[in-house]
Length: 326
Ligand code: ACO
Image (tube, rainbow, N blue to C red; front, side):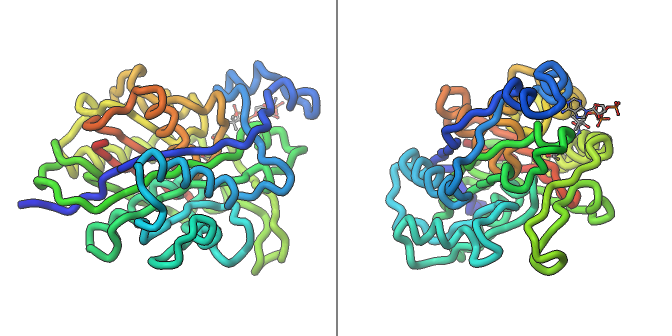
């Protein structure tokens, strides 16, 4: 029986111009290139310019994704934007993107699941497309984490960067076979608020009326990450009958090379199938997966028909996976 699937028509990304290397951070705080590379794999990150907001990055990523898809913005009727660093408390950054693209039909809203935001947004858009509520969606991950970092806390400020990425999805009828259909074949989302104090921002409109700074118990996050990531990927395999051998590309959330390596190893995913951008982008939270997808599309790795496995884990904790045939 045929099935409606959300097929990826294009992807795009944008990184702010300014690059900050580990050596530049080491000139300002008590850290070193060696420590950062050894613990995280990060070598440099992009940082937004003064006056450059999350929406500005998101608009550029969305435009690049539309160009890649060969589509006019008017054909988009849904925008789901994942961010934890919106321009304002409200309205949603998604409506700023919608307005800049000249769209005034359909719906646009933000979604907040921290580093898992893109996977949650992809699953949300997929569900709307499969029910027939919307036809074409822009799913965006965009962040300016540099604005919520405590630049005196060496345990966190070396880890993050700014950027945005986007994909265009279209509802298309497919034969209904998880093993061969194009599009999103399964998504799995989880959260567990018992861990909410392990990675959080110590401010907000209702609690402090300030923006606050990111606080993290790094070891605690590390301890849970690999187990949560691999669990939700096993769920995706069980739901589809696919396995690690059937995956062409593993595009994980780019938080830390050690977490990525350990997850791939545990799942028996060959290292050459892993797309890594954390060295050049740092952790860009909800933007990291579409940024990595964009890199692997541009350099010719991800091709039409390839099976791509996405996963993310972040504050909440939240975590999730998606299997997408390109
Ligand atoms: N430079 C130099 N030394 C540092 C730095 C730094 N930037 N940061 C911390 N240290 C020091 C600490 O002060 C400590 O020194 P001490 O032993 O004298 O007290 C020592 O290094 C070890 O500190 P730990 O925090 O225990 O270091 P750890 O080996 O756990 O590495 C890290 C820290 C990299 C944050 C690690 O815990 C980690 O990767 N955690 C996962 C967190 C993560 O990836 N978060 C991203 C957001 S969540 C997500 O996206 C999944």
